[in-house]
Length: 514
Image (cartoon, rainbow, N blue to C red; front, side):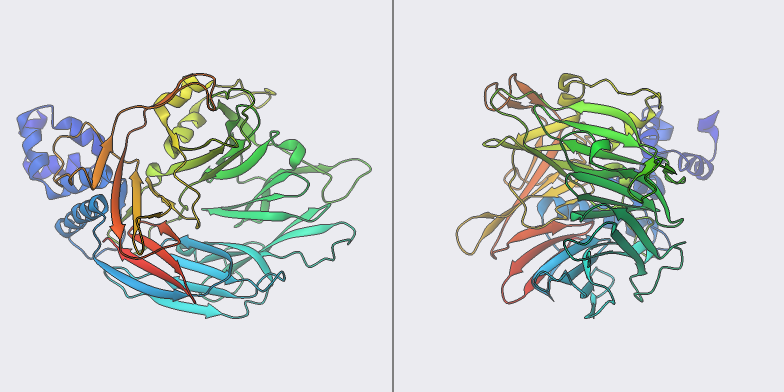
C-alpha cells in the first residue's frame, strides 16, 4: 500500500530514514526509485552522507542551493581546485597552536619562560571575510592550550612556576576561559582545574571533546588525567603504573572513550571507556593523605588490538596517533559540517629503520564499545592482527613527518609537501571516506593523474620489519596537485587546505573549497 501514497507524503516518510536506507529503498520498486531520484530533499540527504557531512543549523540557503554546494565541494576536493587563495600573516616562534572549526590560534614563545600571548584568526569562508584578534597578555603564563570555538571555550594549561627543586606538591593547572572575552567560562563549575603531582610534568598534550578535557603528559613516565570541565570533576586519573607499559600516546574517540598507543615488541592499540559524570577519586591511601596518593577508579579496557609482530631484532619503538578535532555543535549559518562518523586516525609506527603510516576509521574503534565487558575482569584478551587489521586498516610506507599538526580532518589526511624542483611542491590529500561500489555519482571522476581510487591491497612482504606477510585493504582515494610555491607544511580542515610558509612571518595560504 505504500506505493499508493501521494508523492509529497511518501517523500516526508522517506526523509525520516537514514541515507543508506533511502538508497536501499530505490531497489524496492520503480515508484520509490522515481520518488527518490526526483526529490531534492532526498538527494541532498544521500549526497550529504556520501561525503560524510551533516546538515547545518540556521542556514538561509535552500535545499537545492545546499545540494549544489555539496557537489561543488566534492569536485573541488577531488581535483584540489580552490575557489580562492588568501594570504594571512601570523606570528612566528610558536609555543603552541591549534586549528579547530575554522579558528587558527597560536601562542608566541618567550624563550623558556612560557607565553602570555595568544593570537586568534577566524579563517575566511565563502560567506565571511576572516578576522584576527591578538592578546599580548592573557593574564597567565601558559605552556599549552586547547580550544573549542563552538563552546567559546579556551583551556589554558599553565606553566609550572615552582622552582625545579621545590618540594611536592606541584600542580598541573588548567584555566577555563572564554575565547571571546578571556573571562572565566560561565558554564564551568570551577574555572580552575588542578591536579596535584609529586613532581614536574612535561610534554603536555591537551584535547577537548564536548564536556571533557583530557591531558596526557610525562612525569617519570606517561600520565593521563581527564576532567568533566562543566562539573569540575576529575573523571580519569591514571599515573604511569596504572597505564599499560609502553604507552606513547593518547586520543579521544568520543567524550566517554579513548585509545592509547603502546610500543614494545609488536605493540598495540588499547581502547578504554570511562564514566564522564562521576568523580574518579575514592578515599586517600591510609597513612598517606597527600593529593597524589588518592585511589582512583580505573577506566575500563574494552579492546586490546595487537599490531603485526616484527622480525627480531626489530621492535616497535614508538607509536603516535593523530586525528581531527572534535567540535561540540555545528556553527549556525553553515550549510553543513563534517560528521564525527567519518573521523580517521593516522597512526605513525616507528621500527627504527622502518617507518609506517596506518589509517583506521574512528567508527571501527567505536564499534568495539558495544562488546560486553566485565568491569571486574582483570584483563581483556588480546585480539591478534589477523583478526582485526587487514579489513579495517591501511598500512603503507610512512607518508613522512609532518612539520605541522592538524594534518587530519574528518576522513582526509594531507601529507607533507614533496619538493618538485624550486619553487614547486607536490601536495597529496588522502580521502578515506570513499564508496568504491557507487555507480551513479553525479560528480565526474577526474583523470587518473589527479585522482586515484585505491581498492587493491597493500602488501608488505616478510622480513623488514614483520615476521609474516602483512595485507591491508581499507579503500581510499588520493588527489595530487603541484603548487608553484614552497610550503613548510600543510594543515587541513572542513573547507580549507592551509599551506604554511616560514619567512619573516608565517603566511597561512587558505585555499577555500566551499
